[in-house]
View 1 (cartoon, rainbow, N blue to C red):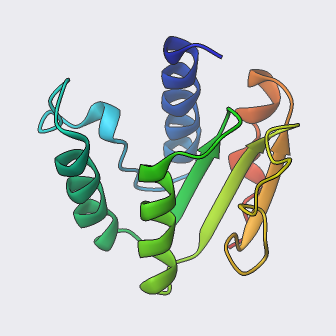
View 2 (spheres, rainbow, N blue to C red; view 1 turned 90 degrees about the vertical axis):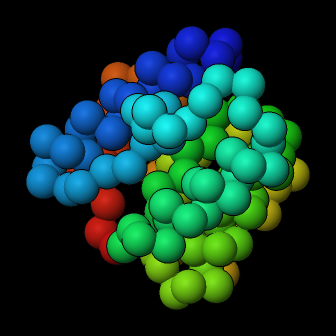
Length: 124
């Protein structure tokens, strides 16, 4: 999945969450996030924003691990915030992300249409 599709999916999920009445923070919409920003600065800023949130919705669309995403999930767990993992079918093999000690709820999806309906299924 290319970067443009990932960004489109993230923004689509954010829009769905807002339509359900949730306040949503997405770094892609944050004017303070600068393209080409050093990864360490980017992650630290994201974690600072996360501290203000009630929960974390993590979208996993590719195999492999995102170090920044893992740090955000770790911070959310340390602060006692619920973590919802939207996991693209087949992307969790060899991962521990869907472990019930990490994700409070796991939502599996296969295509963008299905993904954009997943916010309705969040129960945490």
